[in-house]
Length: 371
Image (cartoon, rainbow, N blue to C red):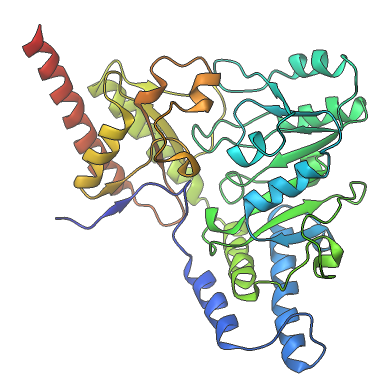
């Protein structure tokens, strides 16, 4: 069998070499970042270097970066800080936002998967005033990019804070927290080539957040617990690499567009969900009507090609994608996600297309035989 092909970067990206080395170097060392002796100071230096690098990726202030155990913890921290208030979340948010507060209200999206700013204005005009609006920057399943800056302007005009889950966007498109105008922003290391088990909540100066984990003074009191120095060091190294993108993502976007055009030429009834909206350059949510996503994923896996059906956090559940359902998509259960990344090659998409188009041809032949 040919070498395996990995097209599931939105689930987790392969570790960048610099991240491996930074994490390994930290693992070979010893020291608690809260200790004052030289070993502790060395661990603290690694953490603070990573903090500067992560802040640099999103144009933020290092003092605003609070390291967490991942994106889910950062999202939970942001939302739970407003547990006693009215909270609005978009219908296409990650489960770690949608399921954190049972009372959170849902903002609908249009057929392209975007929140309508005017709809938000209407909701905000209805009392009581919310304490928080949470809208992701880019969707993990479709890659659709939300009008976050406009949403933030509208929310702030009503005195409402804004949280943005930028986990999928960071490292794929430029992310500038100040330009977005959000109060809270979530990041995750393993989506951009860092280790699993590290994330960050970036907290603007005007948005104090109570500690989610209590028991120590780490992370300026925002997050108790000994810092995971190796994972944080790897996170920082990956962030630095992502910030130095030399145009690879523009190349990836061209590959993705060519793949989608070829898929449409071979399979006229194929659907690219979210194609009407601005999207991440690396993501394609491709629907093959009449063929369950699980069947496509298994067929591709047998051919050595890894893709996913929806969010990795929802894999294994027999249910349609809440993202595609919110968009009003036909046959949401027939869509797979193809996602590329920092080490992807164009030939990987050629192999994907060959297997996927063969599956579509078998579907067509089966339909003709049954007619």
